[in-house]
Image (cartoon, rainbow, N blue to C red; front, side):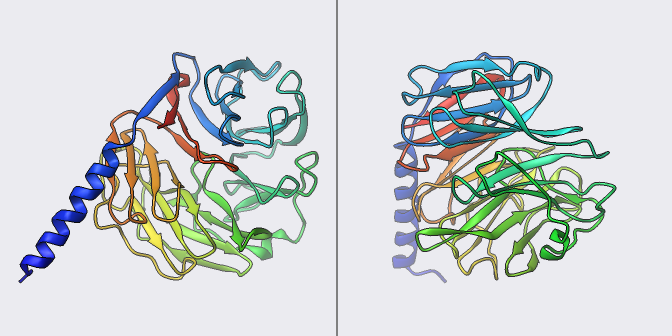
Length: 347
């Protein structure tokens, strides 16, 4: 039987987490635009970029006080599911489906030039990540030409040129039929940071659908995640890495976005073993981000949760729908974005 001391400690912990969650306020910065935002890149506390469908891109250089919206000329019908920004002038956007296209701007979005295109049947890119301003990867679902293989293209020059090495297949295990990735927030691939530097070839990828797994490149491994799986709408959607050992993954079932079963998994040993939280996020979640080692934020179509104990217990701080949340690469600011051009800041 639980002792009085243990009961007191449990009540104290829950109360402390609830009070901590109450400190957080989501402030809407902009909304009402005809675009669903899934790409978000926060450079620092002042500069962020977003991307969405209908060829839409937006950016702010003052922390969201003013936001500049633009439509990429010639790509008005494209869906830009991910974006990577390096400063106020330079960003890369990814259009997902046939043909898959990657564009880059160096003049704050005034002009864009095509740096990659693939018209392979069934082509669908899901996400990008960069280990630094030169080295990056874009990943996509398996296609007919590469069955049961996670599609990958790399850049070594800041996104000016992308290529798919001919021997790349041997550097990642195979998926099963019906296993793929979700282009829900551009965060299902992450490079691993070892110390103060990223290793350009060491990355983790999470999958969903018929199977939910985590794939590691260098070393070559794959492990099943304790998440919902077995349907097209289930599985992992997002991965966050605090360091090379502390990892959080979220997902669930986007077709039943208030279902809390199998929507989060945590690892403290670089993905070798996984545990479920004691109090999971309050529904399907499409993105997760470390704010500090112990504090995390996760969002989805059914709300936003905060954890103050490394992801073991989550508190719902808002029932508002968001697709993506990101912390500044250089700074402390946290922004969120979602449907109808909604952009917000966590205060």
